[in-house]
Structures are given as C-alpha cells and as structure tokens.
Length: 116
Image 1 (cartoon, helix red, strand yellow):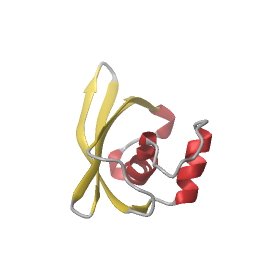
Image 2 (image 1 turned 90 degrees about the vertical axis):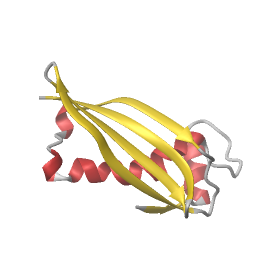
Image 3 (image 1 turned 135 degrees about the vertical axis):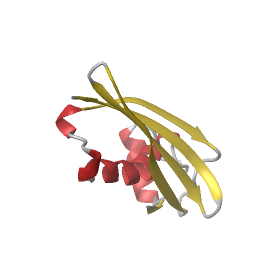
Image 4 (image 1 turned 90 degrees about the horizontal axis):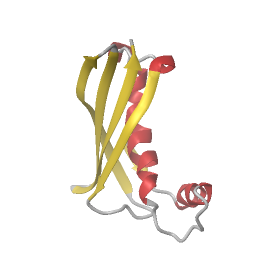
C-alpha cells in the first residue's frame, strides 16, 4: 500500500502527541504510514478469522533504517509472520516492511492476541 507523507497530517499527529510540529516526521508516525495501511487488510479479510471483539493488540516493535521525510511516498507491505494457539489464545504476529523506492524505511512487528 502506498502512502504519501503529508505535512498537514504529520503536524496534526505531532500536536496530538503534545509536540510542536517542526517539519520532521515523529518516529511513532510509523503507526500511520505502516500499520495504518496494512493491518486493516488483515482485520477485514474473512479468511483470517479475526473478530475485533476478541482482539487485543499485545505488543508493538519498530526498527528504523531512517525516518521518512515529508513529501515522500512510501510503500508498506504486511504479512502474517506466525499464527499459533496457546492456552486458549490465538497469537498472530504481523510484520510490516516500509520502503521508499528501493530504500528501506522501517520494519515493524505487531502481536495480536485473540480469545477463542
């Protein structure tokens, strides 16, 4: 999924975090351009069998190669890294890789726990 990093959206995000917008992209904005583009596809896929009323976002991890700049268009690609069951919980690890052209931007991993 492609996403253009727009100045107004970045500034609104920074203000929501209590920061003064300074033209740079806050690190946690990766939740918008990465997770916000890929996770909804997983959740909306009937074949994934994810019920939102049983979903807990249990963990989140990010690793950056560099931070994107305002005006860049990035591409986010998500995949289910693992899907297993333990003690009545279904655990889905979802990974997202974000790039700008051929240059990697960041990698993220989300862990979702679902009650069965």
